[in-house]
Length: 433
Image (cartoon, rainbow, N blue to C red):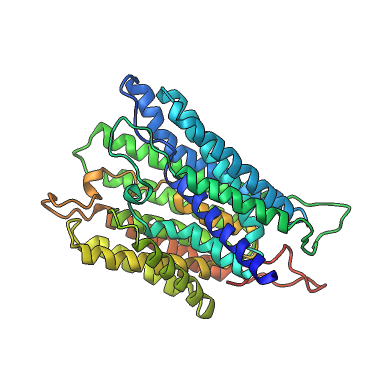
């Protein structure tokens, strides 16, 4: 019976992470109403990356708060609250009649998804099976590519999209109810005196620095391309890449020990996947990609190596550098499999020692990047592409190289966290996945 309950909790962690990551990756609506003004349409479009930025900060803040309690039911109940709020928000979507209202719903959706991600990560990352399930659900979406076919998104440019679909949020709510009831009496060993609860704010500061700098840089770069779309903007791209690495370094140094490894790997992997581009996949391939992501996580538990993780990410970037966006379906299937394995391996290799650090690493995958704001013609997989543009690949490569240097410096000057004199680490250790 206990094994069945653990399996249910793992399924909850997986589905909850999937719902939350789709929420940060795709806004609840990305299309427009025909009667909206250009200003309101622009605001609606910008709500996607801005919502993801808000979500990163909220998710880490929630994870920090949940880790201060010894009762795990607090995390499960908080995650249930976030998922329920998101479900209510999605029921209101079909009645939306303006871009202003849709923008508001996008932000509400991001906040609710972030609460779900942060609270669930705070409890799931402490238990081995749940940690694997949460990691696979959180990073697996990177390999799923274009979710239009899988999620049943209508091609009508004036339709209201629903991502993630209501049935997935509803199922997550049902599972969260069971897991909340099952964990009513479960507790974790407290590592701090009962008379004083220390609230670690450095993970929150790390999330704010990383998210806000990356958002500001990507929006500024996007405006440069809007003003002069025919120019290369190599200098501007270099500035944004440098700002991204500096922000990742600041965030990594604010996190305890070597937890910043996850931040560098997330920034690199996100840029690499953006450089490859996106293409629709059949629904059945989802199971294969999930299995490959799981294999990556398990393999990293047996043979963790930051150098190998960076090498795998570099391989993805190399594909984007040398291969035309009109490559064959076989080539795209192969790189999709490689992305799935790499995402899982990076997740297991990061091995953060605190839950907020793990949540930040997962959430940072869905921040905008210097690659994601490049003109669509440079990234899309289309049959009518006359010439391969290596700009996205070169931009991603610069980010990967900067992250590799940062990882070397971090491992050089940050020793592994050691136990305290009483045999306990400074914070509740995460499950070794």
